[in-house]
Image 1 (cartoon, helix red, strand yellow):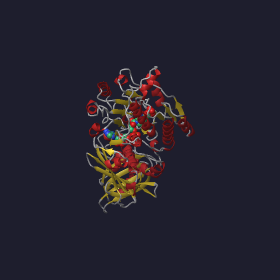
Image 2 (image 1 turned 45 degrees about the vertical axis):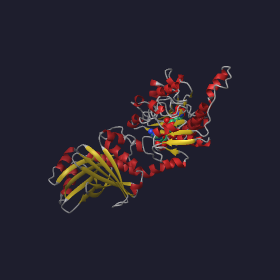
Image 3 (image 1 turned 60 degrees about the vertical axis):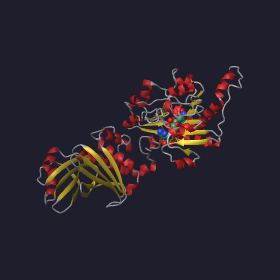
Image 4 (image 1 turned 90 degrees about the vertical axis):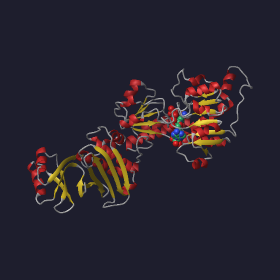
Length: 539
Ligand SMILES: NC(=O)C1=CN([C@@H]2O[C@H](COP(=O)(O)OP(=O)(O)OC[C@H]3O[C@@H](n4cnc5c(N)ncnc54)[C@H](O)[C@@H]3O)[C@@H](O)[C@H]2O)C=CC1
Ligand SMILES: O=C(O)C(=O)COP(=O)(O)O
C-alpha cells in the first residue's frame, strides 16, 4: 500500500480522499529534522504547505519518495531542482486559494486605509481617540498591481468594484489583455511607481523578483502611497521598507509574508510604524484549505494509483487518456534510447528526435523524456526517469532537440532518433504495427522490420551470397538460436544491415567469429527488455 506523508496540517476532506483511494496516510504535521527525513524516505509521496521546507538535504537519500504535492501555489519552499534530479515529480494546486489570497489583500488594503488594527488596539487598552485615526478613501485612488496572474487579476477585479483605477504590470500579459480586464497596462515597474496610491505584488518569488521593490523603487513612489505584499517575503526588501516607513517617505504597508517565517525578533518590519502585519494568512480560510487539500489529495492518488501527472512544475502533464494512448510509444521511445546507448561509439553530443506523421500532433514531450531516459539509464545515469532525464542529459552536455514533421512518409506515425557523437551520426526509427507492436523500421539509411525486444545482433555488411548462411552457422555452432532475422539493403551486392533476434546472449567467441568475416564491417550486440516489460516509471 503506497504511503503518503502529510507534513503540514491538511483539511480532513483531503485525508479522506487519500484513504478512500487505498493509500496509507502518515498524518504527522510539523515533523522536523531527522524525524522528517525518515518519514519522507518511508513515504511514496508527501503533501506539504509552506511551513515544511523540503530542502535538497532532505531529498539527498529520497528512499521511496516519488511525488511532492504542494497544497497551495508557491513552490519556493521546495528545492525543485533537487527534487527533479532525484526524479521526484513536484505538483501544486494553483487556483484553490486564489480568491482567499485576493480577499486578504483587499482586507489589508482597507485595514491600512482606515487604520483599523491600530484603532482597535487603542480601544482595547481603554482609549477613545477619534482624531488620531483619520484614514483615506480608496474610491478614485490608483492601485498598481505587479503580476497579473490568478491572484493579481482577482485583486484588480475587486479594486475596480471599489471604484479604484487599476494599473498593472506583467511581462506575460499584453496591454490589450489588461485592458479587457479593466486594467491600464504599463511596460515596467518603474513606470507604475510614481502613479500609484496603493501598490500590491502578486508574483512568485524567483531570482528575478527577489528585492523587486528596494530602496530605489520605494523612493520613486508618492509619500502618501501604501504598499501590500501577500505574495512572498523578500520580494519587497524588508529593511528598505522599514526605513521608508520610519522616514515617512511611504505612508503605510500591509504585509502577510516575510523573508524568514515564522518571523524572528530582528525583523525590521515588526517595529515599523504604519504597518499592518498578518502571519501568512493569505490562504487561511476554510474554503481555500478545503480546495487545496482536495486537489492535492486527488493529484497524489491519481499519480500513485494511475500514473497520471497533473499540475507538475517539473515535468509535462500526462493525463489518463494520453498515457493510455501513448504508453506503447513511450515504450518504443525508451527502447530506441536503449538501442542507441548500446550501438553508439564516441561521446554523445546531440540528439534530434523527429516525430513524423500523426505523432507530430501528439504530446511528444513525454516521448522525448522517455527516449532520453533510455539513452542514459544503462550506463550514464542510474535512477533516471521521465522527470529528470532531460536535466541529466543537459548536465552531460547532450543537446536534445525535438522536431515535429506532420508529413507522412512510409508510415502513418514514425519516431526517428538521430544521435550525433564525436565520431558519426547514428539513426534509428521505430513505429507501431497495428497500433501496438513495436518495430524498428530504420537503422542508418537502411529500411527493415525488426523486433525491439530481447537480444539483437546487428551487423553491417556487404550483400554477398552465403554471408547470411555463414552468420547462421556460426551462431548455430555456439548453440545460439536465431528467433528472427531481418535484412535491409540499398542495392543488390551493396551495403546492407542485418538484425538477428537471438534467444539468448551470444558468447563472445561467436560474436568475434562473425565479426571476422571479410564482408562484415561492424557488429553490435544490443540487449533490450523482453516484450511488454516496462520500467517502474511507466507501469
Ligand atoms: N500569502 C499567501 O498565503 C499566498 C501567497 N501566494 C503567492 O502569490 C503568488 C502568485 O500566485 P498566483 O497569482 O496564483 O500565480 P500566477 O502564476 O497565476 O501569477 C503570477 C504572475 O506573475 C507574473 N510575473 C512573473 N514574474 C514577474 C515579474 N518579474 N514582474 C511582473 N509579473 C511577473 C507571471 O507572468 C504571472 O502572471 C504565488 O507564487 C505565491 O507565492 C499564493 C497564494 C497564497
Ligand atoms: O499557496 C501559497 O503559495 C501560499 O503562500 C499559501 O501558503 P500556506 O499553504 O498557507 O502555507
